[in-house]
Every structure is written in structure tokens, then in C-alpha cells.
Image (cartoon, rainbow over all chains, first blue to last red; front, side, top):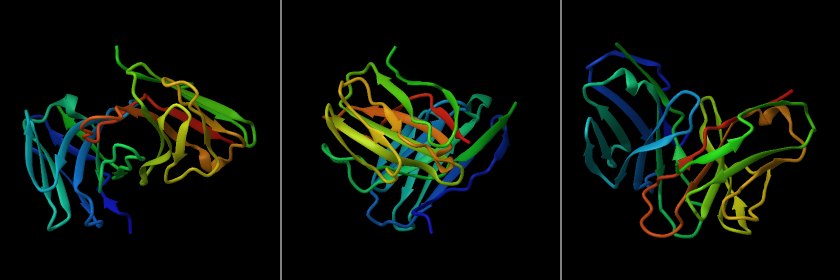
Length: 115
Length: 115
């Protein structure tokens, strides 16, 4: 079983829809949670970062962490065609000032927002 | 423009022919890393470097070498490539000091095919 599970999609929604992207994980030591966005033929870029449980909002994006269920979500409100990309969840048990800063990534969910 | 650059972007080679993928960043970051991305497996770390002349193994280092002789450059070397190293490779960098939020800046990727 992989440490981080993520539905690969593709997930196709109409413009303006609310999108829900999710990851489950098995390592209870994870406490740092991130969402990266990856456009086609580009490298991933950090979208949201959350420490421990709770919600974090940034514009149309909301990241949610439920450590008791080992489940994280990314919500996109009023989705736009420009949101079409692959969304990768990533997590870590610690961030070291020295050390390899290991991130465990999900395999990514491909999102298509239709105009 | 702050960026991570990789060359070449696409490479087709044959088994056993040594190759180097270059990576350079202009953000004065101490930390640099190489990942490979495979379908269904997400991003996996190959090697990382905390600073000049300091490198260490990530999750999947077999068959790869790296060097860090200058702060800005972190080349990935495949001494004797094999078909199972066919993958999409990303170089990434981040600050070493201060509050780390999981943000790593990724290059555009190098798609390598080993025949």
C-alpha cells in the first residue's frame, strides 16, 4: 500500500463548479501538508501549505486537513479553465533545517475545467 | 526572472551511453534536489544537496550520480543508463534557512527515454 493515495482522475467539471480534490495517507507522523499544481509540460508549483489539522483559505482555494481520518482536501471555488492542471498532494513528518526535506507526493489528480 | 533551468528538455539515448542533465538556479538557494516522476508513482527524490560539496541520497538513488561544485548548479549524471530510467526528471531548489513551508521551486522537467 502506498503511503499517499490520490485518485488520478481525470476529473472533468464545467466552469464555475466547485472542485474537491482529495488524498488519503497512512503515516500518522505526517504533520505538514501541501498542494502543488502542475501544468502540462511544466514543473510543479506550490499552491497551498498547511500545518497540522484545520482549514486554510487563499482566494478561491481552501485546503483542509483531517488528521484523525488521515484525509486532506483541496477545494476550488468558481473553477476556471485556467485551473486545468494536475494537482499533487505532498506531505512530510518534519522539516529540517538540515537534511533532505523529504516530501511524500501523491501521484496527482488531473483536473479539466470545461468552458 | 527567478527560475530553475534544466537542459536538455528532451533526450532519447541508448542503454549504457553516459549522459548528464544540467540544472541551474538563479535564486541563491542552498538546497537543491532531483526527482523523477513516473505514472502512478508520483515524484520520488533521487538525490539532494544542502550546499556546495554536500550531497546525499534520496529515495531512489541507484544508477544516478550528482555533484555540487557551485551553488547554482546541480547536474544529474547517469553513468550507464538503462531502460528503467526512462522517466520525467525534475530539478528543484529551496532556501536552506528560515521558515520552510514545503516550497520547492521546480524546473520545467527533462523527459528522458532510454532505448
